[in-house]
Length: 215
Image (cartoon, rainbow, N blue to C red; front, side, top):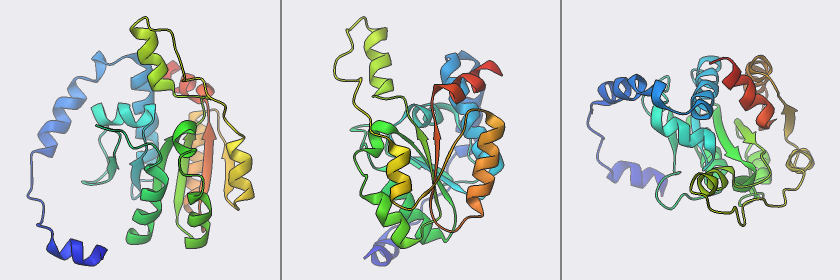
């Protein structure tokens, strides 16, 4: 079915991607510091694994990327974190992309998003997909909470119970590693790219603060 859809679809014409990227990069200084830190995180992913596709879920790192990230190659970055914001999209999409490309796909996700698709952890193992799940665990819906606070709305329904997602991934036969510094992230990504099968790279606000401190 996928092959038939590809045959039926028209080739995408060349656009002005370079010009749009230049305009986005020129406005980076106006972004808030946390967002620029997330962009630096994405830059490190790209520079460490330039051949990998980055296919994200609805999470703060992805939102930042939509404003100013420049991938290593056309089509090297994608997500569905606009419009209805399909939480849980990242992991199954990354599995499919990895199998189609026969290569590594990095999927930035949040703890809230992963809980929409926990069953796909087993799917990735069965398919031997070369997926690196870059999991930001902030114990809730951080982007929504930030928006509420910015509008002086009392946060409601955003501080959720979060299970031990690293333990669930290990139980699903994933390789799991935690990182707290940019150097550790680069090392973990490089190692994961050489491993057969999926890897979960787990981080929290410690890593985000480390990136912001370097701006």
